[in-house]
Amino acid sequence: MTENTIISRCQNGDSAVFEQLVLHYQDKVLTLCRYLLKNPHDAEDAAQETFVKAFKNIRNYTPDAPFYTWLSRIAVNTCHDLQRKHSLLSLFFSDNGQEHIDSQPAHIPDPEKAYQTQQSMQALQAGLKQLSVKLRTVLVLKELEGHSYEEIADILDISVGTVKSRISRAREELITIMKKTTEQIRF
Image (cartoon, rainbow, N blue to C red; front, side, top):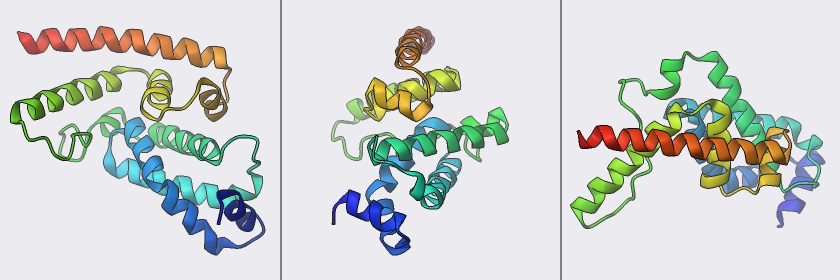
């Protein structure tokens, strides 16, 4: 069954096939939420809420944009709503106060490379956390999720020019932050 067929059936009241959409997109949505929220528990809640909202509003989906673009917009908005509800500290740290790093490769035979990769990922995540929500969101959608400028504009309901501007600023700020972090590690 094609994605369009599944969506059409959902829009006509066949809620049983919605599970196929969830199974297909759950990992992508959860990853997006994790990058935006940094707290694994909040990310799981946001991903689940994204699918609840998508299910409730599937009748409003039109195939003008890809389904994942529409779903990503719901996820981003859900994450932003959740961020507004939590304090700044709970957004960036897990319950035990340690930063959550789950982007380590599953298997690297060389311990030195594994350590370097872990250090790089920690520096990247620390840098991302220092960006404003607006800049972090566009950077995650572009660089980590692989969306086009047009898709990001649709997801965030902003112009393509604004997307390009924010991505440029986000990259510049992230480079500056990463340089400072690298210098601090050396000393």
